[in-house]
Image 1 (tube, one colour):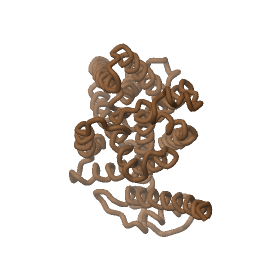
Image 2 (cartoon, helix red, strand yellow):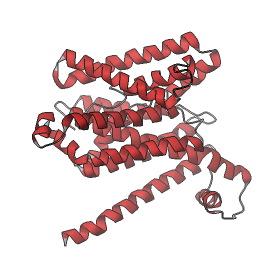
Image 3 (cartoon, helix red, strand yellow):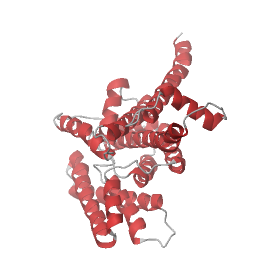
Image 4 (cartoon, one colour):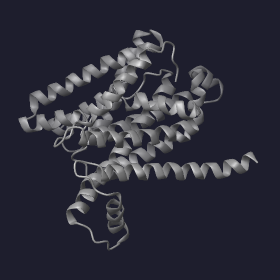
Length: 342
């Protein structure tokens, strides 16, 4: 009987998750300074994807398809990818405060992307995502080295991450101040706070594959992540190839973070807060925790994007401001939980 229930529960949960994502995407396309009815959003998608011939106002259809819907899809991918990265890093490092932003991965990705965009490093061989990926890997390698030399237990990686973040943020500011013109400086500083304003459909073809590939890799190693709950030594004793798991999963987190940073800038707190919210919903088994964290992250990011467009009439706030307003209090609560574990 339990097998029968499981056989029906898994597809049912998948359809429910898909329905939640679709509703969130529709809300992202409908809600804004100019409200657009949900049926107009649905008809626009039908016209564009399935060749339907619904009569719609060209302006409304253009807003939905060319501006809001692509933005909502990338926001969902970004939220899911950062939540996945935070979940994986917290499990691997056994630290509830680990996430790509705090560990300096986002800051390193920002530096790599800015170095390619402004300094032209790589002479055209490196794209913006490639520069962000290299920067993310360099940042995490530096943070890991600093933590290993400090040798102060579980808190060392967080302290090293804060130092690394400050270093790479300073390098980014130096590059912008030294080499960028006034227009580039304004655009990049706004982008660094998290900016979805320039997102269009071509950006989806980077964000969506990166997020789906990362989700697939993380789910493949879900049981290994469960074993890391008891520490790396215990995982090795259970037959887990610890070094390979570290390399693959850290590389996957860096890839996802770099892809999202190259598109929308550095956005904090999602990778920190969302994994804890997901654990409150479904527990600590990563086979379920990872997809739920991705779902919650996607919906949260779409909601943050909606708020960024309607909080101040006539002006779009950087989305990082919205995530920080929610994430900073949650971070303070986590700091107050002594001895917390992922």
